Length: 257
Image 1 (cartoon, rainbow, N blue to C red):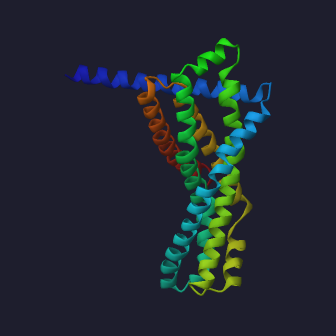
Image 2 (image 1 turned 90 degrees about the vertical axis):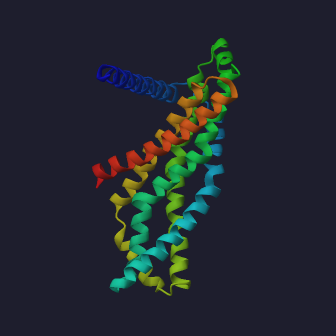
Image 3 (image 1 turned 30 degrees about the vertical axis):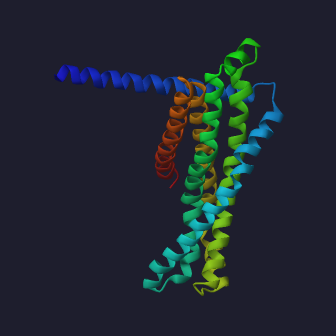
């Protein structure tokens, strides 16, 4: 019995190590396809529109409610100590360093990452990827690389939009509903945010964008089993990306704090 258990654990560990190795090689080939000509600018712009522009609505909505919640909860907590004028600092630091990159990445994963995995999965099970190979077209350069470049550009931009929208909504709510002084709110924001905070937030956004598009394209590219397999690949892409984003957030926070 102990030997059987150890055998199963060892087999599971080898499967995990093999999966990580294959995914890492996939990422290397994707990066090579992104930096090696020919550069397919039309496909990059198309994917930038899909990943970035079409995510603006969900990012704006999520950031607005996040700013409202932060302002209200911050006010309720700080007013107990007579420090309600620091609501702006609390909202700004929370958004810039943590919530904007993390929640932004999760929202983009739910909208764009799932769609990328499903699209590539359908192309795999309908043999469209095999058709590209038969025409001597590199699938990594044609399908994966444009999505990687688009995600790297769109990720930090969507995070910046999340931060600014959340701050703006929080400022309006704090001034007109909570009756805080607008000048004090703006001053607390400007004095609390440093260049390092902005760099940390955008660095996280860049890393999360790589993780999102990496897992989405990897799962879609290796989908098997028809429509059911595509659905399973899409689900795995969203779940794995979400868990990886949260784990990477802890690691990056520990390294950059």
